[in-house]
Image (cartoon, rainbow, N blue to C red; front, side, top):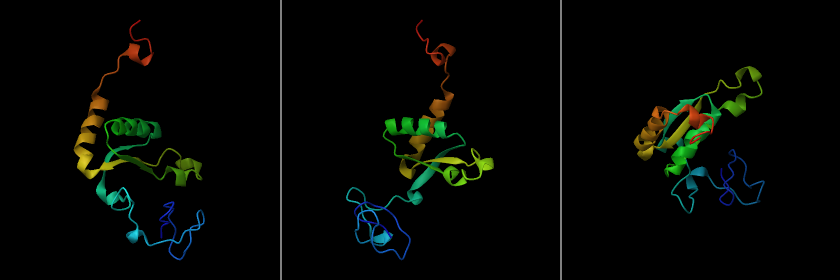
Length: 126
């Protein structure tokens, strides 16, 4: 079930949104004004897999700058209660299927770009 007003999702059996008191509707009946359906991973492909959240955020920023919608998905938050698993959950970077090739090219370019020592230290041009 989903709230058509604030888009909060609920399990079946709940009828009213706890946040805005709006009657809930089934997920399959929900249509956003600017989209024809809810985001599902069926329309997305994994463009990159990492264990470093900062790396995932950096790639997402670069892809977003190129106009490519990106979703970061990880089970890390659910595993934090057991500290032995922190950092072990894979982090997946999803892009829309139709932009996958373009995203893969950008990611490849990022990893193939050589960074010079003077650029790392922030001393470029000195």
